[in-house]
Image (cartoon, rainbow, N blue to C red):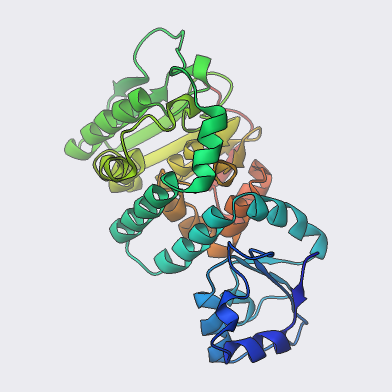
Length: 334
């Protein structure tokens, strides 16, 4: 049974010191759902209360207003709540950490936001939801590729540097090998200003299915993992040459396979491209920079919907939202 609240309920609770604990990851309903009428208005006190609530807040509203902007996700139909509810109930702690992070980083600068994301991710790495997932899914050993050549093929022609993800047998999963190769190639672009354009694409059927799940849980501890992300995050390096960078996407762009390329200044997707952020089902949040790159393209609420629901969107919807800059018929690599 889902409780659906009204603006009057919010007004009453905003002045009640005990009401903050009504909804939380530890309660029967780990999210707040509110039905808003077209004319719904609320005081600054109610908006502050919503921003402070330690769980996702969802509004069902026909139009946008100052009040709806305070919610983490806004939908126009009650039927669209179901995938959000299912995902939040599966990982209520990760869902709460996610929305608190997106609220907190909305006005932070780029560097501070990435640090906050990494710290939040590290917190969840030691949490019970990820531990349960890891217990059931821990791989005996990392997956082995069957591809010739380095993880990233680097080609320079004149003033253009082409980077090609070269692990199609692993769907170009973002392994440690891939991460380090990307950083090395992008550092070249930063150091050499004669490189006027950097193009990034993936070989095979898709751009990238994201982090290699067989490597999950292999680092010694969450604190060390946080420090490694601060030292070796491809998205951070890509952002430093974003004005010269173009990501050419096709097929699946999942998890970090979506988070990383969206730091590029120009993102062009083939018509068959689709995006998905499934981290919540692992008890985690996007941790490859997606809590920064994605909301800065499409806003906090649409990013919240993508991350909380785990649902796919296609290239057409991504273009409508501003997640990508252009759709073309095809540019699939070999």
